[in-house]
Length: 287
Image (cartoon, rainbow, N blue to C red; front, side, top):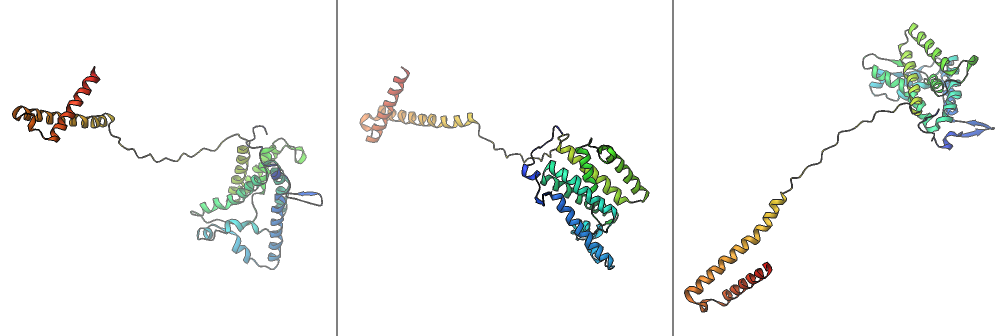
């Protein structure tokens, strides 16, 4: 049990839901109570030769694909009284309780819920090609497989280790299904047993699930202006302004040479004086 992925089922989840006369009651017990109640109702209906209920709640892939999806959930509530049903209830109580103690209530309920739904979901997918039907509780034996995976060396019946008993029972049930040409039973056996084994090994940290990497949208790229070009743009303006000023000064000097300084207007005089001051400042800066 070293390397368990999460010892962290919260402590309150590993405790009983309630106590009844000093006896701890777990979620596994409530599951059994529901199935036993369904067995009693099934027995009464069968005693009156009334099979209308099973026609409404039993699984049928054609009807599920036609929209009657509730059958994926209700198929397990038609349970005639048989020794197999009794054995399944003992498995849920005993092995389910131990799994719930170890993993915690939420993970146990997830495990059993997945086992319960796995068979009808697979049969629904197969029903696209070949119609399938079934009724009655399923998933209890897979809880034993989960227990044997978690505690493989625990001695059980006649001191047979749990792992060897699991191998023997899976083998026998497989041969029984093949002999009876029970394809639905064979599929349910291997699918639920395989899922239970994988669930425990995953929780123990022996493997991890692959992560899906969804493609990310590439950000839109903007073309930025060349910084050199920008620099040239800003430097060109003063140069152009300076060229225009010198041309005006030359024109004013030509006017003075032709008509004398008295021919300049006050505005032209001010402009010439301003140009002279600029030249003096530049000369002082170079010095």
